Length: 394
Image (cartoon, rainbow, N blue to C red):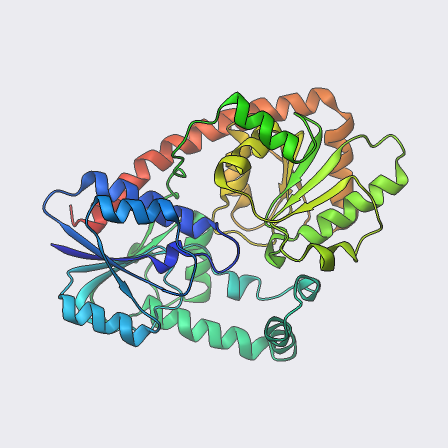
């Protein structure tokens, strides 16, 4: 059996990490543990960042990788290699492949382009002409833009392949698909929670100290926000909430660490000057783990999620979480976090104050988070095996 794996899904276009990429890595690791006689090849974008650890994995398992720059080239690889199965953890751009003799298995991580195509503050994250042009287009021709995205997704969901298997990462995603595409039969869609992220190194106390020193902070001294440069993660409203609180409350003694801000100079101009809001570019996985573990509270104001890894990543350490009550987040986090309306800055402020001053509740939500993580963790471990069994036709 020959499997073609989509490694483009593991190459994030912004920063070095994203949820679908981590999902794809975890499936790949488990797949390589399970294969016997099966042969795995892959395709990738030669001009985009590629995880060095994945490169090492390819060498170790003798995986051939084909450079591609278009869907036509991917179709050529499929055709010339006579592959039985192609798997993609991020298939949204693969809606026009030639798959007549191949089984197509893919995972959808929400329908963000239909549910949340834009936001009033999206432009604040951009500086380049191309990004700003896209923002303007989406807002002027919103219905047309949504229609275009819907056509592409419909082609993907009805792709003409030897056999098609649709996997989704949450109940929310499944019923979003059925809402927007009522012609799809619900039995065609399998729900499997995303795999647990892959971590290759144990974090030492020395690494923890070095990372916290790097940000001039210590345990429980900071609120944490991630993916600062992605408008859909909504860091602007959260930072604005903190900015106002820092002015209004003289004894606000915590820092605010915002990770993943690539245009720091541009972002700073939107807020009043303060040394308590620290903006930083993306960090390595081990550093992010340390920041999750030692935060006073994790703030996740996302405007749309198909699943949502980050709150769980914090809850496993007992770090309390305040986050959006939107899309899949309530399904995954249950009653173990404190929710807010992500569009209301005053409500975000309300929850920040609650977690800041109610020590008893903060500790209780830390315990609830650990318990919730364990429950989801066991389902994730089980579901990744099911995903791999589908790919291997077991």
